[in-house]
Amino acid sequence: MIRIEVKQISGCTVVRCLTSKLNDEYAIQEWGDELTQAAESVGKAFVVDFSQVMFMSSSALRALITLQKTVALQNVPLLLCGLNDSILEIFKITNLDSIFKIRKGTEEAIRSLQYLE
Amino acid sequence: MSQPAQNKLESASVWRCDVSVSNQTDARERLAERLAEQMLLLEWAEKDVFDVQIAFEEALTNAVVHGNHSDPLKLVHVQCLVTAAEVCLSMRDEGTGFNPEDVPDPRHPDNLHTPSGRGIMLIRHFMDKVEFTPSGNVVTMTKYRKTQSQRL
Image (cartoon, rainbow over all chains, first blue to last red; front, side):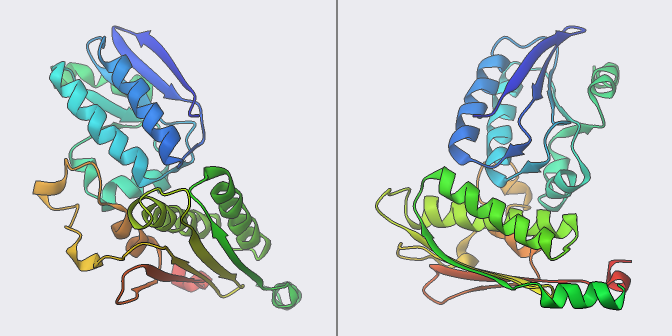
């Protein structure tokens, strides 16, 4: 099971992943469903904070791509933040850094929204 | 590395493992943890441990999900060799195999929004040598230890 914490900050839905290893495809499927559910009543943006995550497999990437489609239907931006260097490398080599808005931390993600509007 | 430290590493036992795992995640998780522990015991860099773990997870998930179609009665046969110089992993599933060349490039703009198909690319990126048998149901992958100067 992947634990998450959902908060509303400055009108944005912020989901913080509290589990350090995102590798179990069954747990990731549940996690993806939880994220999608949270995205259905999203604020002005959806932010996923990975600062507690040390490891991420491609199953998590799959869940995020599916999430992005749901969030896009709400016409709000999806931002990812708190990625460590190794996980960021995964996004870069797969070119997924070109389709996700990646920010350093939650504050920066929320602050950057004014430039996206 | 100092000579005594080098000698200590060389005398540390090489870790070999030959096991068969089902689609149950607990057994796979324990195996992944043992692999990481053995690498750290032989003083591999944490980044290398991360790289090998990614490749291990991706190959095992491919074998369970795509090879064995998550059939709980089918097994994945895993062989691991961890030494101070290299880590070699081999996985054989009980499926009909596939041609890795048929997997589209996930980095192509047309495929960027496709949810799956990134596992093999990650394996190739994080390991130094990756080979599939012609039947496509066995993958063997190796990571070589880099010297300090190679890291710079």
